Image 1 (cartoon, rainbow, N blue to C red):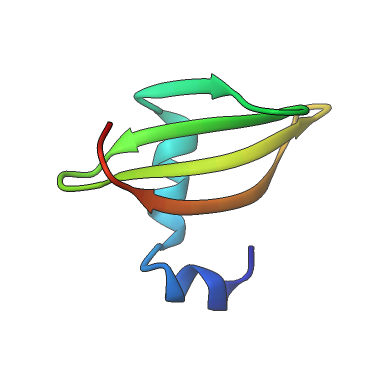
Image 2: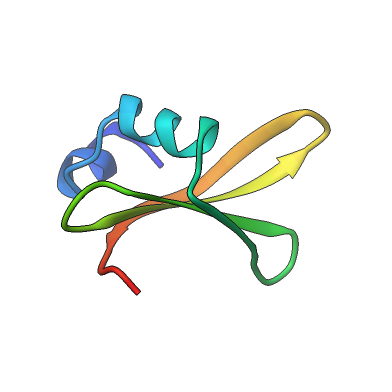
Length: 67
């Protein structure tokens, strides 16, 4: 995900870091992807990533309606 994508989605690096450091929920996804989600008031922020060795590679991040 590049800076332009984050701006279009109304995200900033601090929000994504907050989700990764202290998610409200973590779910397994297809393949080896992981979904981390955190409540930010009216919406939840979902960060989808892959773990390789001790690194987290972000695939995408987006705002989602609450479940």
